[in-house]
Amino acid sequence: MKIPFNRPFVPASAWERLRAAVESGHLSGDGPATRRCEAKLGGWLNGSRVLLTSSCTHALEMSALMLGLKPGDEVIVPAFTFVSTANAFALHGARPIFADIRPDTFNIDEEKIEQLISPRARALVVVHYGGGPCSMEKITQIAARHHLTLIEDAAHALFARYDGRPIGSLGDLATLSFHETKNLHCGEGGALVVNRPEDVARAEMLREKGTDRSRFLRGEVDRYTWRDTGSSYLMSDLSAALLESQIEIWPQIETQRRDRWLRYAHELRPWADRNGVGLLAFEAKAEPSHHLFSLTMPSFGAREGILRWLAACGIHATSHYAPLNTSPRGLRYGGRPGQCPVAESVSERLLRLPLFIGLTDDEQSAVIAAVTSFAP
Ligand SMILES: *Cc1c(COP(=O)(O)O)cnc(C)c1O
Image (cartoon, rainbow, N blue to C red; front, side, top):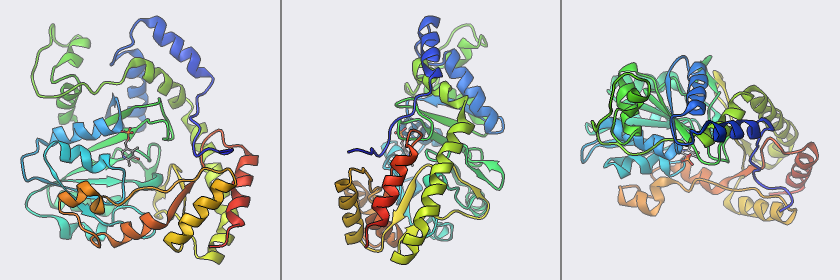
């Protein structure tokens, strides 16, 4: 492919940061680079405790452990998301209950959540799709009314805001991803955001194999011991160094993504309107993080056609999110075809265009020319 779907961005300062991490002699988890990243992200998130993890998947698993799930407990998840959003809770004993999405933002449909809440429901997980915040006013009210733990899967949405408030600070817990396809990355990585101060000590233990080693490293106790059942969810300090090189310039990263996103929207809108193609919409109170640029074609055939056409032009576009309710594993948890009609329909018609920091103006012009020369 001449134009890839993604090229991971590595700022020039990364090499200095990586060298310093190697020379510091602390390459394992919870080292100086990890602490600095956590402090900077925590500052953005209104003082929440941020724990860097090996992945967003692991941060979601930590969220599941935080719930102390019992057999038969249920966790409500959107049907249109990456598998980890449901798998992490299923792995720790919950039954995922699949909720449909809104046809405009592709976020969980807040009007369809309450009908899914049974007495076994323990948590509500929302995904801010593409970096566009969910309708958080209504969602926080629903979670409070039904005593559900609210978890934001903010893998796409770091540095997005809803009604002026940072995404990731609105649920009880939130998870971030630093996979190389995400806005900020370190190859593989993630974070758990703990918004209730009373949960911090336990979250730290779950990340450190169930021990209070984090307190020991801060000099708060003189030895550490096994206190809970956790695992090893730490990020290597080498990865944190790579991440830090991006956190320190995040406003530039966000501006560059936004400029490319807005150019796509501006130059593709007339073609989209003429051809019945949808562009992702955001709520009035949302300030998105421009994680992805999607087109929603009028039919499955048109989506397959444009993917083939773009590939023939040397452009790698991709589809995504097979609905979880109709996946082989989802069916085992009681999912069924027709249960989430919006998710099922969007999944067949959506594609994402290349959107990354190194995408040049000429490359983007080539993508726009290829798309607009396709008639569905
Ligand atoms: C990427 C992603 C994840 C998983 O992130 P990893 O860091 O790769 O584990 C989870 N949820 C959503 C919505 C994602 O896009």
